[in-house]
Amino acid sequence: MQNCDFIPTPRAEAQRQVFVAHGQGAPVHATLAYHWARMIEALHAAEVIEQLLADPDILSGDLMSTGQRVGEGVGIIEAPRGTLIHHYRVGDDDLVTMCNLIVSTTHNNQAMNEAVRSVAREYLDGQELTEGLLNRIEVAIRAYDPCLSCATHALGQMPLDVSLLDADGSVLDHVLKSHDGSLRRDLAAPVGLPA
Image 1: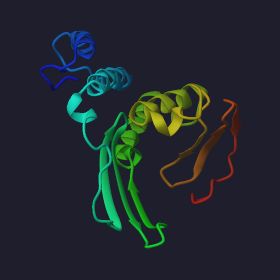
Image 2: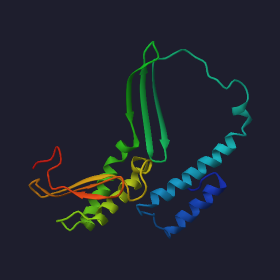
Image 3: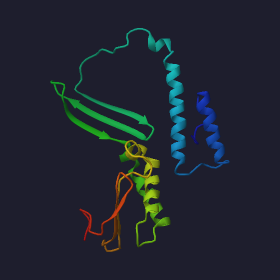
Image 4: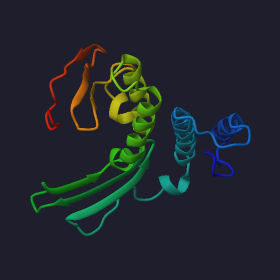
């Protein structure tokens, strides 16, 4: 949104200009601005789809592709949450024999880790995991990967399992947030963490 000169569809371009104006000449770095930018991208996509549905070159001639059968393929697509890479192999019986997916969560993992670390630095008192802290962690994760949480959970109802460790790796606090938003404090060390 902030690096292009324009979007070539009228409604999306109008919204991009509002977005850029919000920064008053500086880049917009607000975490939740990712959602705003995604909505502008979705509007642009809808406008392009409308144009393509009336394109005579697309709608004329054969609409089915033919060719030699191939047992392997890779597809890459940009989605609202990031780049998706799918790689498949199919046997002679048309069953998938290998599937390798690199999804947006993988690409966004470092950014999500940095966002959660930033939340901890600013809002963690070092002793206790609070509901407010968990809500801020949820916002940080949703900003980079809304599909990870939003697809199945309403705001404030994203299940979380958060442990607070001291410098030696001992558990100081451990909170489980359920899909219904309820919290359960469990000071027993989670699986995989030192006691």
